Image (cartoon, rainbow, N blue to C red):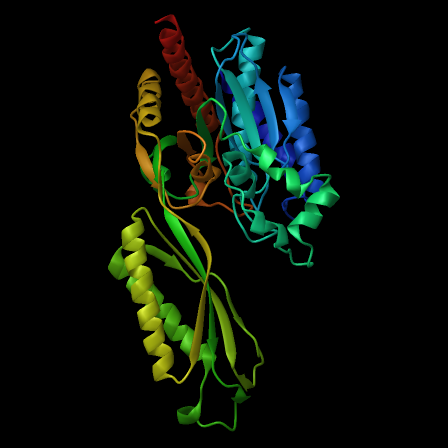
Length: 415
């Protein structure tokens, strides 16, 4: 019944993949011409589904399928339309286009809901351009921070200036907040970005919560020197210090049962015949248990200080990002489990190690997530892949979930 709508979702994912600021791969960043073009494309599809559309003061795209009931509350479905460089077609985008197709089904079958159903395409989940994630959803949740106005991209353009160039006024960005409205909840459909569903032979799964994360910029300083003239015993090599630090981080993460990643490393001297005098590296550490994560962070800091002291190096550690672990709403999780049952499926739950817009939206309303299986768990890469069958299942589950929400609200109104 829904297969043709699932096929439309995948076809539209292919169309949006063509909107990129790079000719060789998908790259769509906040407040760019490609951001504008993707909003315009999706807004057109929304209007064709009889939805009211608008772009808010943060650049998020909205479409609303209005209820005929006066002063009806609103439920929000959505995800993000921005990408990382060299991305796949489905991360975020699937979660915008799937509810759009569901609303097309409602519109074509003359189905009305006892609440407004809004679809949002968040503008900046990835944080690729300005280095701070969830800008779009944080504006909607009412947690935008004014200090972000001075964030700069790689070309030195400040966020406030980029918003002006896009036709937005950063002084009005707080008007994007929907935190004071009567929102029933928010649900995000997203590819899993991991291999758990595939390992369980499950097409979709219910997300129980989103891991908290901390990110640090680490700078190791030593003393640059000639590779042929400084004896090994007299060196203050920042690169070898950094290597020991990376291995220590791995060891401590395993011991504490968290995940920690050094994803970036750069030597400032960066010459084949020079002892490195300064190395910068990143640290990303995550866990569903905030206390456990903090315990590991403390252990890492202590060990890193021992390493640099032993090697006569110096160390700078700067916190660049922090988000606590976020639990999904238990009532909506139960409703999703019932939706699985209605579709003759076993409900399967799993946690998310990646951050999502849903973790920002929890400050505005109850939130939930539905994961869709992706091939080999690959994401943020051109080989990111989902199947028509799995997307169809996700669409069916979302429809059943909305039916349960509708029936529950209608019963409450009658009572």
